[in-house]
Image (cartoon, rainbow, N blue to C red; front, side):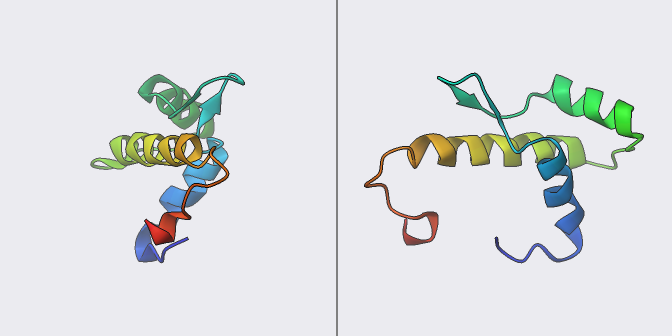
Length: 79
C-alpha cells in the first residue's frame, strides 16, 4: 500500500468496511448507505469529505479487483 501519512485511519476504516462488496458474481464499492450505517454503529463522526473518500476508495478497490480477475492482468504498480 502507498504511504498515506496522516490519512492512514481512512485505510483502517475501509478495512473495517471489508474494502468492497461481492455477491459472488459482481464486485462493487461500498455504497454511501453502508458507510453511513457503519459510522452510526461505530460512533465515527465524519469530517469534511471523509465519507465520500471512503466510497471513492472502495469503488477504486472494487474496480481493481474486477480488473485483476484476469490471471494475465498487470499488477497495479505496472499499469
